[in-house]
Length: 127
Figure 1 (cartoon, one colour):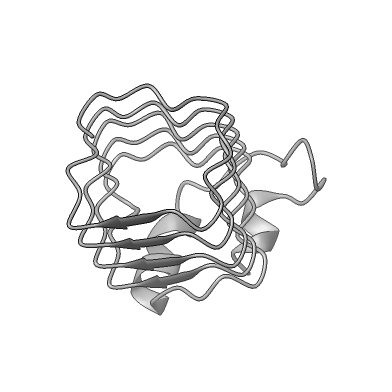
Figure 2 (cartoon, one colour):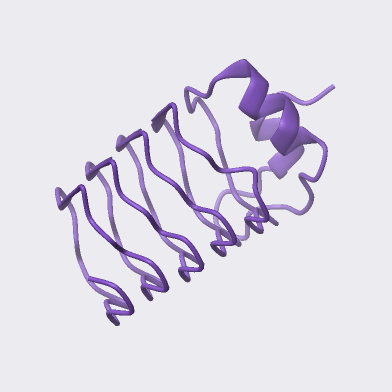
């Protein structure tokens, strides 16, 4: 899947297991109820994606663009989101994150999600 263009696709329920998704283009895709385990999205374009009720287990998103992404009610278990990923306007409402990761994301959380109107800092419960 490395470098694949899946932008604007309906990928609800997709499974990315042990998937090399580096530099993948998922911009504007619907990934609700997807499962992403041991997947690497390094440098991918995840802008304007929806991941409602998804599971990210041991996934890696270094330098991935998550601008305006909806991560509402997503479980991020041992997933690396903080290294350079742009989360401007991302909505993490009711997402389950490791507290260490949440605190790291809070240090650079900015913007408001254009769909939900929720501020990124608010969705991460940053103080």
